[in-house]
Every structure is written in C-alpha cells, then in structure tokens.
Image 1 (cartoon, one colour):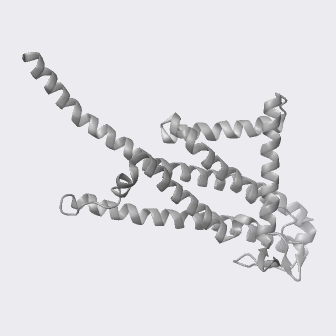
Image 2 (cartoon, one colour):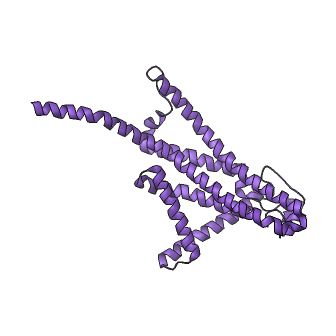
Image 3 (cartoon, rainbow, N blue to C red):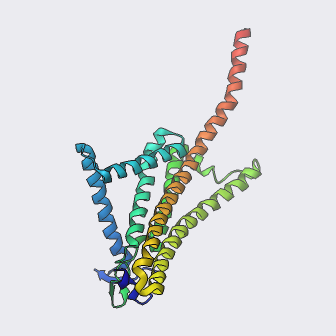
Length: 276
C-alpha cells in the first residue's frame, strides 16, 4: 500500500472534490470518508458502553474509559464547577472524539491511491474547510447558548454592549470582546484545516520522494501524524471548553463582585442593629 501511494501522481486540491451525486446532492470524497468515520465512532462507543454495562472490559474499553475520564477531569478543572462540567463535557468530548477519528482515518494509506477518473476516492473529512468551519460555528454558538443560560439574554448582551458615557473603557472592552468572538471562530477553523491539509500533503510528498523506499520512510511520518492528530483534537477540545467557560465565568465573577460589595453593607446594618 505504501508503494502504491508512492506510485501515484501528486494530486493536491484545496476543496473537497465531488465523486457522485444523490438526487442532485453532491457527495464529495471527504463526505465518503466522513461516513466511514461516523460509523466507526458510533460502533466503538456503542461497543464500549455495552461492555461497561455488562462488566466485561478489555484493553480497548479500558483505554476509551481512561481517555473519557481524563477529558472529563479537564473540563471540571477548566470550568471550576462540577455541575456545569456535567453539561459541558458531552459537547467538548464529542468534538474531541470526532476530530480524532476523522483525522486518523484521513491518513490511512488507502487515502490517495484509490482514485476515480483521477480523483481520490477518500479524503479526511476534517481536511474540508466547510467541516472545520462548521465545528467552529458550533463552538461559538454554544458558547453564546451557555452564556445566555448563565447570565440571561440581557446579561449576555451586556458583555459586548455597554453605555460609552457611563463606562467608556467597558464599552471599548465589549467591542474588543465581540471582535474576539469572530476571530476565535476563524482561528479554530483555519488551525484545524491547515494542520490536517498539511499532514496529507506531507505524507504524499514523502511517498513521492522516496518511491520504492516508501515502506521504510513513511511509517515514522505516520506515527508522527497520529500524534499530531491527537494533539489537534485535544487543542480543539480545550479551546471549546475554555471559550464556553469564559462566558459562564463572567456571570460568576459578577455574582462574586456583587457579594463583595453587599458584605460590608450587611455588616454595617448588623452593627447598627446591635447598637440599637
């Protein structure tokens, strides 16, 4: 398979390429790989859940449990609230597993050599900018949803829009925060897309340059890409957790700030009552 990968002509396409259509809807090579990744991930999670319920564990089940527990503890540490972590963890951990599986499937040796009319049949789903952009939109939108639940709609808008006459610095800070939301969305999408796309091109060029020595030259790079895939999935997971926690933490900060101001007042009232 490594030799077959080295024998193909370099084919680099920035957008995902259409393979066929279904009722006029285009099916791209990234979508085909994505369907395989979805099926594999769902099967793995159902398999693990079944084994855990029956109390029959093996190394794979233990590995998945260890990864889940590690990620869940990370969500708790970042959010600082166990109750909120239970609501946030399913989203963050699902994104991690989705990116990890899709990244790893996209670097398999079958991705590239198998072509239809010169177009690769398979391509990593997360090497499609539409998908990474959609993941970033989900993260930013859910950050707003969680913030509204914590602060209310008016309180959430207050993070961005403040009276410039009463609080000029706060009004400017709110505008910067609004711009930051859009920059986070772009940064999340382009970071993941760039790393995945660069990894695919790297493997292709190493295979092309080494030709018949590809079976010896490529395995270290595949191991490296497996590591990079895990790192990229964890970075996206961590940034998702942090961005969502920031909005909720803003509400907790306001509550703490109000309680700090109310405590001296309460003490004064108590002192007056004692004097009387």
